[in-house]
Amino acid sequence: PGPQIEIEDLPPAIQQAGESRGEQPSPDQLHVPLKEAKRIFETEYFKSLLRRTHGNMTLASRCSHVGRPYLYKKIREYGLMPDQYR
Image 1: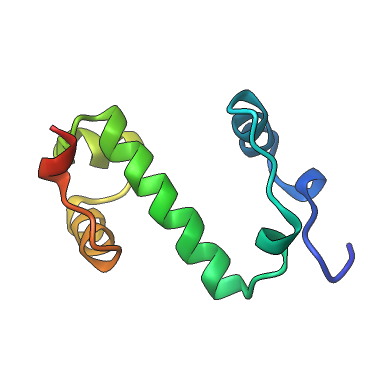
Image 2 (image 1 turned 90 degrees about the vertical axis):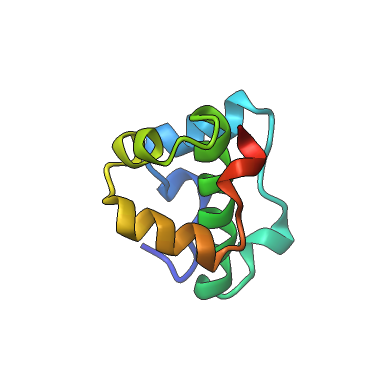
């Protein structure tokens, strides 16, 4: 409801993911512009996705519920190389 998104405002699955890894966002991470926060989140999300799927883009597409063309676009946008995760 306020001008700032707090951890409590995030969906439970995201809250639990951070807790299970023992990570809490630092105050600096909470005070970045939305565009930068989205870039950071998506970069980490796609890195994790590629690790879990061992760079298999078809499987990554299925797991993330996004089409392969979009997935390839995002992977290129963030400079990730699927072959590095195989």
